[in-house]
Amino acid sequence: MLPKLHNNPGLRLASGAALTFFIICSILNLHRYWSYYASFDQGLFNQLFWNSVHGNLFESSLSSTLSTNVVHTQKAPEVFYSHFGQHFNPIFLLWMPIYAVFPCNETLIILQVLFVTFAGLVLYALARHYLQPMLAAMITVSFYCTTTVNAPTLANFHDIRA
Image 1: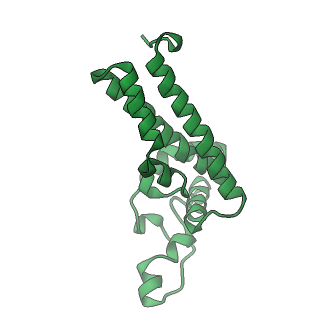
Image 2: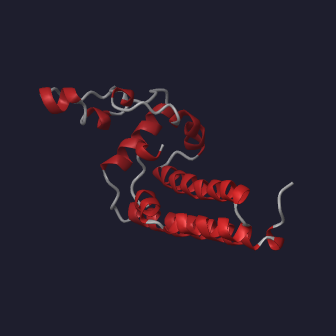
Image 3: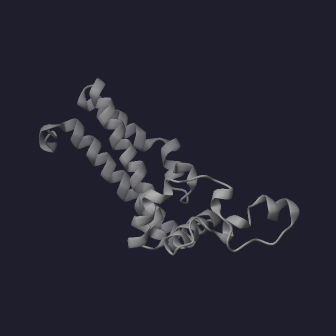
């Protein structure tokens, strides 16, 4: 049975922190993208997801430009290059259906912020098993305020956070 939000100030604080984090990070990330400050990686992963949804699983010509063949042996980049040649990310398969429904770069941005937000709520649930609700909530708030959480969340979508 789920605890009621109005009877649990710790859960209310953790939920409020999660919602605030999600809104602020989403706005900042979307603003960065819409003002053309996204980097090469954002385009690489958008291309990878777009190609995968359209039948070319994990193919990315942008990944090819970073491959050993291109960088060290000066070969031309391949259009059909598999990103699996550099990184093994089968978890992307779980996110492909979401991208198929919303096939745009903003989807990757929102997914990234959503996953980190969810991680904070999981932290609250774990901490709540061993600690009082308010202490667990304060730990969750501190999670959302740390540089080690904010810096990657406010960066471009990347497989390091996968």
